[in-house]
Structure formats: structure tokens, C-alpha cells
Amino acid sequence: MKKITALVICTMLVLCMLSAVSFAADEYLDVDEVDNYATFIDSFIWNGERLNHGDVARDTIDDYLDHREKYNVDTRETCGILGWACFYEPIQVFGYLINGELHTSEDFAWADNTALANVVEGWWPGSGELVREFEVTIPIKDLYGTNEIVVVAVLESGDVVKLNSELDPTRDTTLVFEFDPDPNATPTEPPVETPTPEVTEAPTAAPTEVPTEVPTEVPTEAPKQSGCGSIVSGLAAVLFAAAAGFIVVRKKER
Image (cartoon, rainbow, N blue to C red; front, side, top):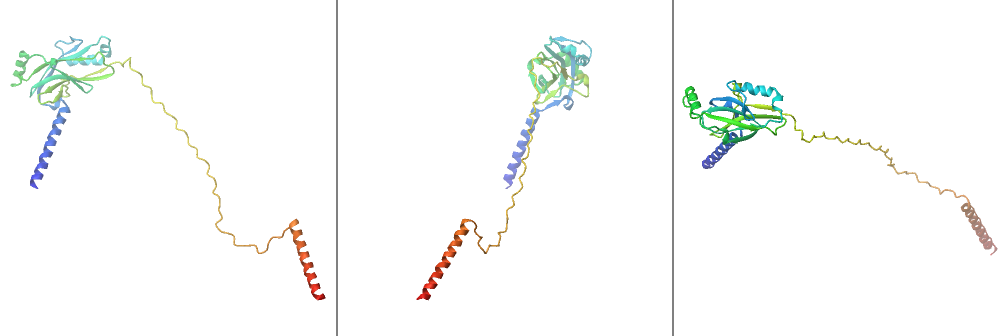
């Protein structure tokens, strides 16, 4: 009995561990939820051109997002963000989420930047070998409507961390574009409501009363006949009486 109980407990523990691993792999984490040294945005890039040099990059991003005429143009091809990130564990690859769909590429990570590593190491000893610089490029030419984009880092553990931040908005890589609607989209017509026919109830016939009692009175006399039937009956009676009288007379004569 003890062996069976131990086997059941071990099986439950294994299932719980598998569920936890699967859950962690499918979940996207906010950067504020994960221990890290720092993340930073250096530049906002539009069609391959860096739009700010030395200014706060987030201010340039917000200026673009606040003026739709700047990005709702026929010449848009790509947008991107240049920056760096440093977590307590190695970064495997960079990518981006667009409307919740993950895209990654090894091309997004720059080669090791010794100067950057030395600076970060001076701030946080032991972080220099973990800092990674990135330039994530997102194709936006064929996007219409509302699109939310955010840069992500995939850590050695498999965690996908969004490089957003509510604690320090200047390091938030989230982009929300309100592009014009697709001019080639087929308009959708509202569903046509079919009227429900009215059901009229047929008039209910009055129930026919069936007599429940059988009449008990039975006529004791036959109904009197009239017409030819009554005449024939009368003649027959007369003839019968005459015949009876004739028989009586013959008997007296004997």
C-alpha cells in the first residue's frame, strides 16, 4: 500500500512540473516582473534612418505616435528600435511581438560591444558579459488598422520578456500604430434579419355535448296508422267479423 501511495505522489509531482514548464514557455513576461540590471533605448529608426541622436528616444517615438500623418504614408517600409538589455542570465535572441504574435531573429543582436560592456560593468560589477545590444527591425508596409508592437528578449531559461516598463516609461519599447483601414478590404454587410412570421391560432370549436343518459321511457302503444294502411286494416277487421258471424249462423241451423 505504501509503494502504491508513493507512486501516485511521484506521478502527480511529475505532471505538475510538466505543467509549470509548459506554462512558462507560453507566457510573455513584462520586464518589471523579471530581475534585470537595466534596459535602454538609444534610437528610434524609421525606414532605416535614426531619427534622434542624443535625445531621449522615447520622446521621438511618442512624437511619431501622436501625429498619424507622419506614419500613415505610402512610403513606410520599416520601423525599428536600437538599444541594449542586461539581465541576470544570458540573452539568447531578440525579437518582437506584433498583436501578440512572436517573431525572433539572430540578426537583431549586434556583435559584442566592448565599450558598452565596460561602461555597464562599471555600474554593476558582473554585468559586462551579460549585456547585449540590439537593433530590431519591424516590417510595417502592409499593416492596416491598429497594431501593437513591442521588442522582446528571449532569455536562456526560455522566458520571453517584453522590453516594456511602467516603472521607467522612457525605456518602454511599445509602439501602437493607428494605420488607415485597408482600402482593398471587402466591406462586411450587417446580417439581414429575417422577420418571424406571426402564428395565428385557429378558433377552437365548441365541444359537442354527448348525452350520457339513455332514455328509459318505452312507448306501450303502437302508433296509429293513417292513409291507405289504416283503410286496409279496417276492411280486414270487417271481413273477419262477417266470417265469424256466418260460422255462428251455420252452427245454429244444424
